[in-house]
Image (tube, rainbow, N blue to C red; front, side, top):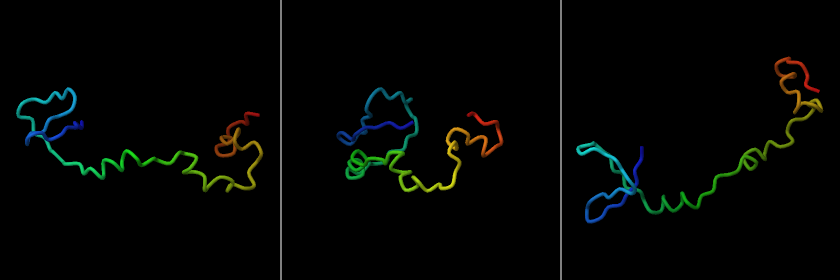
Length: 80
């Protein structure tokens, strides 16, 4: 589990209700401000954007491939 917090007067103050027992061993890793800001503004590409280079690459497939792909791949009965 990850807890977030800030240093105030030399003491790490955790955000929210953190239930840690006294004497629990912890690791503190400072987060750079630039890295934190870029994480918020960086947008992940949509599935369409990721697969766009492959659209229209499959040629010569049967017209009902989208409906009966299991038939063509595994030999199951056709749906339509």
